[in-house]
Image (tube, rainbow, N blue to C red):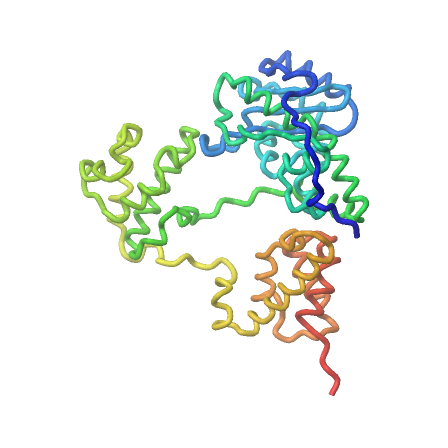
Length: 417
């Protein structure tokens, strides 16, 4: 199986501006209709990208949409003023194959606008399956197309209006070579016999439903590991929940309303009055002072909780315990996981696909912990593992590769006496 060699030395040619110039930003219903007609008259797949405002806004919405199709050219669309006028665009592009890089990042925000592909090609995911060590857009464009994309504005606040000219240039370049990159990645996948594997993965990403948010997201507050009392955890939970409500209401990233460090400081110091609260770091700042009553109210609610309503000090497990506890709690499961991991590592090397793309680590852990019968013979082990992986959402190509290796590793044939 031929695998791309990332070590090849090439001199990349900088790509500083789109060949046809930066297209204008479309922000009216009439412009959207004209763009839809042009895209419908084009040919082949559609290159798609979207710019969000992660770290600045609460929502994952798209604040700029970039499109490019052969025969039509590139388009930049500001979805904010035309979010209710995209029917013509959806009719023109939703039946096409879309080409995105890291599609799972942009599809949710585009779906909110009624834009969703009939087929998908993800160049980042395709690069992983093709065995590339570096799968960022710039790295792959340089490796496969010999061009240099100079990144720099991906983490900007794309809700800014008007958008700076250099940002628009950057955005247009993100789709300038995406169709060529798609063809190069597809050729590598075809050469390695992985075209069908990639198609199954792309379809999985395209149709994947968003997981419901976990109820204990507040436990991811940075610095929470330093707290040792359940009452302090209750303060974190109440402040986190209050912050989240404010952030959603204002469509502002939560950390910009109140950083995690301030939540931890309040949990440690237990302020009783607004004056005491404002002596703590951040809470005395002009942006936080306006919400002083909300912050103190959250602390007071936590203080008033009965002991039986306090959150447990350690997070309840939803599934297997941490792997470092397996040896003590279930040595047989620990041995199964060790054997399974070794088998998957060998398979990863053999097919040049990252082990996490062969099977998700969580699915493998769950199967080794409690997904296998205590007594299974080698004769029915394949069916046992197959059924578990099907239930866990593993695709057919993953099961075709993994099931025989896992059956051999987890249920080796009995030695003849």
